Amino acid sequence: MGVTTETRADPAATAAAPADIAVKISGLYKWFGEFQVLADVDLEVARGERIVICGPSGSGKSTLIRCINALEPFQRGSIVVDGVSVTDDLKRIDEVRREVGMVFQQFNLFPHLTVLQNCTLAPIHVRKMPRKEAEEIAMRYLARVRIPEQAGKYPAQLSGGQQQRVAIARALCMSPKIMMFDEPTSALDPEMVKEVLDTMVELAQTGMTMLCVTHEMGFARQVADRVVFMDAGQIVEVNTPEAFFTSPQHERTKLFLGQIL
Ligand code: ADP
Ligand code: MG
Image (tube, rainbow, N blue to C red):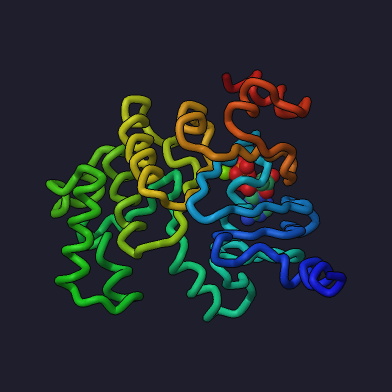
C-alpha cells in the first residue's frame, strides 16, 4: 500500500503525460537588457485546447508567444513544446518551429512570391516535399480558407483579409500541431475582421491547438477554452471566457475590460 502511494507521489511519475500537453511553460522570466518583460509565467496548454491571451499593450503577450517558438530567447524557466524543450540548440529549435504555425499582425507574406508559392516554399524547402504534392496540399488549404481562386496572384493584389487568410493557409501547409496568432486582425480594415475570425473559428472546430493573442472578445467567447489575462509581464488571471467576462477577479482585469468592452 505504502509503496503504491509513494510511487504515485513520485513527481516524475505524476508529471502530466507529455502526450496530453501541447505546451508547458514553467517559471519563465525574460529581460530586454535591464527591462523585465516576463516574470514567472506558468502556463500549460492541453492538446486541442484554445487559449486566448489578452492584456494591455506592452504587457508581454507577443514576447511570450515568440518565446514559445524561439523567436525570442529567454533567461530563466523552461518551455516544452510537444515534448521538445525550447533551448539554444538550433536543431531543437527547428524541431519546435516545425510543430508551431505562426500568424502575425502584419501577414508577413513574401511579396515577390505568388499566393501558391508562399504556401509551398516551406513544405518544399524545409520538409523536402515534392512540388506537386506541396501544391496539392496548398490548394486544399487555400480552399479551406476560401480563396483557391487567388492562388496565382501576388500578395499586393489581395485585400488585407485575403492576405491574412493566405498567411493562415501557409502556416497550415506545414501541418503544425499548434497554431499561434499574434493579433491577426489588428491591422485589418473593420470589414475584413470577420472573414479572418471566421477562418479561425473553423480552424478551432477541427480540434487544432490554438494560442491566440487577440482582443476580439466575441471570438474569445465563441472558441476559447480559457482566457489568459496578462499585465506587466505576468499572467494575472486565467479563467473560462464566461467567468472572465462576467466576474473578473482582479482589479487590473476589471480595469482592462472596462476599457475594451
Ligand atoms: P504586447 O504584445 O503585450 O503589446 P510586447 O511583448 O510586444 O507586448 O512587449 C512587452 C514589452 O517589452 C514592451 O514594454 C515593449 O516595449 C518591450 N519590448 C518588446 N520587444 C522589445 C525589444 N526587442 N527590445 C526591447 N524592448 C522590447
Ligand atoms: Mg503584441
